[in-house]
Structure formats: C-alpha cells, structure tokens
Image (cartoon, rainbow, N blue to C red):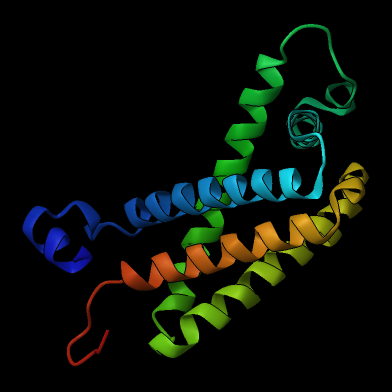
Length: 168
C-alpha cells in the first residue's frame, strides 16, 4: 500500500519525510504503550508522565526543570515533547539504513533488538551526561523501547523504497 501511495502521490519519496512519519508514529505508540503499562503496574500515570517530562526537558532547560513547579508545566511538556519526537525521528532515520538490509522474517526480532539498543543508549549511555534518567530505568521503560524499536524498524521496512526484484 505504501508503494502504491508513494508512486501515485510522491509523498513518501523523501527519506526525511519517511523518517518523520515513522518516528512520530513510533514515538506516539511507544508513549501510549508506556502509559498503559504504568497504569497496569499501578503507577500514578499523570505523576509519572510529569516526572519523565521534567527529566527529558532538563536536557535543554537544565536541572531547574527537574523540580515540580506550581501550575501546569506547559513549557516543560512542550520541550519534553519536542525532544522526544526529535529523538524518535532521528532513530527512525537510522532505522531506514538498517531496514533495507533485512529480510521480512527479521523485521520484528530486529526491531526488538533495535529497541533494546535504544534503551541501552538512552538509559545507560545518556545517563553519563544526564544522571537523572537513572530513575526511569525499569521493565516498563524497556518494554516501551521494545515497542518503539519494533514499530520504527517495521515502519522503515514497510516504507522503504522498492528495489527491483525485492520481495515484500
């Protein structure tokens, strides 16, 4: 379907357009999965979302963003959302280079490995620069990253440009 739409309208002909589409989709689905998993774990969903938003926003806003602030933290939520989707699009762009080399049977396991790798980078690599992310390590965050990896690599694979003789 993606190839038909792309050939007909040319919308998906740009690698950057595909990265944005896949990144935003995967970032959104992973967030929904994380919210659902927090709820199933009995965690306070809104409080945990605001905590993680402060952690993310502090990358650009500094450590002052880590402290809860009076009122609704619109600025923190906006900055955290922009960072989240910028990283999602970046990871989706990288996934495009990987997806073209995968056989269709390897897309889901490859996506899970991709998500695991992103979890390691985000929650272990970035903590060298931003140590406050240690609090987010755990099974729920790992599962959300697995969802992200599967959707990202799967989406990149589905939207990859067709090659002559390539089977989908």
